[in-house]
Image 1 (cartoon, rainbow, N blue to C red):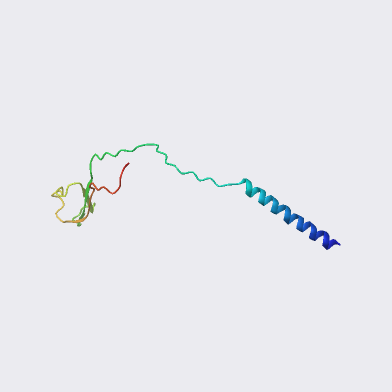
Image 2: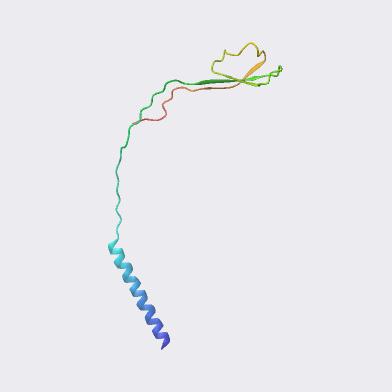
Length: 99
């Protein structure tokens, strides 16, 4: 008798949960919204490009071993032994579009 009561309560619980799920599914839905929002326009103005030259100074009793300049001909006469290590030049390159 106790097993029958437990079985009946279990079946009633399953039916109740199924009814709740079916009614909830009837009231829920998915809404997709698609749109574009324009908030600002950006303009780009390049004022100047930079150049950097890095020279290695060989030891002549000088404490600084690196000399950085913006002009490749700007090595002072006090540095007789030097070697170009690196250089970087910024230039215009259109890799993206501004709308």
